[in-house]
Length: 334
Image (cartoon, rainbow, N blue to C red; front, side, top):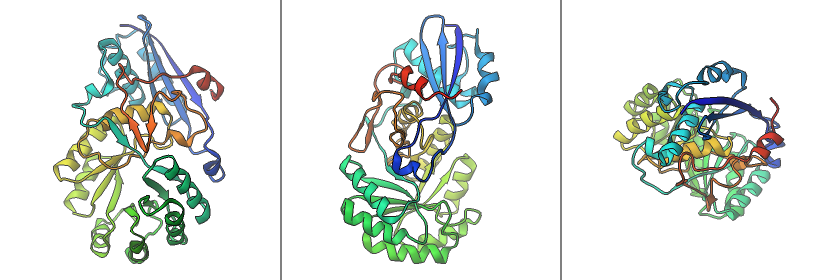
């Protein structure tokens, strides 16, 4: 099955208005389409400009798509090649990762740093849509007021993942905020609360609060180091699909639950790829951070089904989603 063309579409799909107010643009996205002589088409997604992939993509033309090692390619092409292989063999992409252990993958609603009343309004939207957890880019000066208002608007069962991207900085600050937040009973996790160069600080913070502590990590060695330091309750895993598989297995061996963020504010292509992978990870039980619904348009035209805060794992061959080229062209910039 010869590769006849590799097309790269750099797109700018605006974020929904509440987020766009603060983040007019967050990062570049390039969609990758690999076409074959048999008429099959595979898709992948890269967070960056198309020029980075252009040379590698051109070198794939003329090669046998099924003879290539997909995991030896940049991950956007890994995804596209697995999409093609799944279509050729009539199996969903998750079959290439292992045994499927779930049919639905939980996902968080998401907000960037906003004013407390704005975040609370978004929490009400999330709860109304059926989400049960809200990933929040938190700031020390207003997180307590924000969580208070979120609970009022969204209810006691709507939980909050507090992610300050280390803005709390020091354990005494994080411990003080944790003590103020614990009575609300809605904070599900502190992710990257303090500076990440001292794992002893994370172990100390675990002793000061009942709120679970998590780190956002990618390299297998970093996950292993955190587990040995006994400084986390959960772990947020990023990176390529192969990397996430390795790190999830390490965390599973330590009986540590995880969630996955391969794309974040991505499109439905990368989200579908991540959902296939997550469906095979036994300990990926926490709501993921794949957030195509933060964009005003959906390049997969609803074929990655989001229902009551869960993605349904696609069952069709390959990625099992249909890319709408009209949407891609509408938002294409290069």
